[in-house]
Amino acid sequence: MTIDAWLQAATADAERRGLSDLKPILETLAKATAALRAADFNSAAGPQAEADARRDRTS
Amino acid sequence: MMTIEEFGRRLRARQVTSVQVTEECLRRIDADNARYNAFTLVMADEALKRAHEADKELAAGTDRGPLHGAPISIKDLLDIRGVPTTAASRVREGHVADRDAPTVAHLRQAGAVIIGKTNLHEFAFGTTSEDTAFGAVRNPHDPARSAGGSSGGSAASIVAGMALASVGTDTGGSVRIPSGVCGLAGLKPTIGEVSTDGCVPLSRTLDHIGPLAASVADASVVYHALLGDARTTPAVPMPMHGLRLAVPRKYFCDLLDDDVRSSFEAALERLRAAGAHVDEIEIRHATDIAPVYLHIVLSDAAAYHAHTLETVPERYTPPVRLRLEMGRYIMAEDYVRALAGRDVLVREVDAALAQHDALILPTLPIVAPPIGAASVNVGTSTEPVRNVMLRLTQLFNVTGHPAISIPAVPSSTGLPCGIQLVGCRHQTDALLKVALACEPQITGVSVPRGGTDGG
Image 1: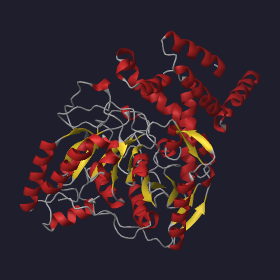
Image 2 (image 1 turned 180 degrees about the vertical axis):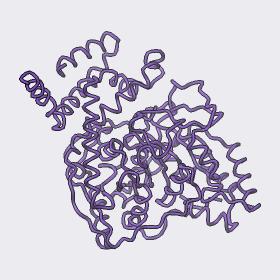
Image 3 (image 1 turned 60 degrees about the vertical axis):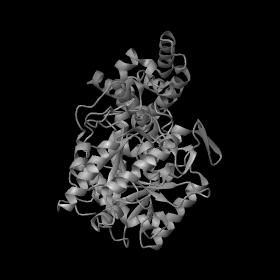
């Protein structure tokens, strides 16, 4: 799930639950999640999974 | 502050009794607790009973060791049989512990006199001890400022002369942060070393239990008591000549208040002059620590609180409730990413320590923030209080390395500054030896601190 899609869903759910004060906090969390996913120990994971899938298809 | 060492000397020299010192602590609680909000519960009758027993035992020739008869406070997150564990929250109303946490049982076996339970940031989920059902904890050095958190009441109780030492918990810095802003020694042992049974969890992945005390030697005494080996010979300082320290400047020294920076650099100079080698190293992924920590602590905390967030949400303080709710939205894939980050960080801190006895860095980038402040100025930047207070401590909860905060030379306004030493995993005793050696250079005083007459 992309962070944008997650944030949209999370914000809508928080509002449905009457927790509209959560919105700015969820936006902060979205930034932290983006930073986590961008860390190089994780940024390698996406391309690696893709490469593994390609290798599996050709083997 | 009277140290446990000084108390023990005077106790055994028959210059003071446990009852006298306990009564003095109770007098100070009576006089000042309304001002500082350090305690959630004062156990006066039980403490005096235990103090009488301690004096009688000593007179009869039974000496339980260095904590014998010493009044100690306990963070109100740990179970003490027969009294509530409130976690400073209305969510826990009606709770009464049916047994002592193992750490509390160990303290009793060591002869400690448990004087009461201390206030904290609700459920230990904050760094200022402001969001609590018992009123904000105030820093005895300046009551308009925070005592740090989450073990703020523990720190305030020692500085205000209400206890000789305290036991706190540390999930992102909650022993070291209040120690740093209150001018105390605060130890977070290696992860898993001290039992967390009987303690309300914040994060089962990151929680630690450790002592706050007036000196490194006192912290060492309480730490060994928590482990159940109260009779251990007091730690001996490592020789200063040839001591190998490493400063991780990148990230850890990038954002510091000017007074904190001056205090830190002056301590490094004194350590070098005393014979220590001080190198500079880099922990490459330290810049990633905040998101790694956040995703682990929020997920763990949300899992523990899921039921009460549904059933009694109104009993939480609003800021803590919102942070806990935030954790319920973290995706599993991101939690796994954070755990992958933890593995990388453990290896990097291990590597940084491979050629050194300890890392050395400030405990916090700032001095105690004003109560109620949402943000603080650090140099030319304005930062959220919570983020900046956790910035230099949270890494070592994630990696599990032992870390101790030692009081450094205060700021130009007289507020305490702390310096942190970090040792190898499973070598907390070795870290304590380094800390004992460095303490005089870090504090800038060569004689033991303390001195108020406890009775």
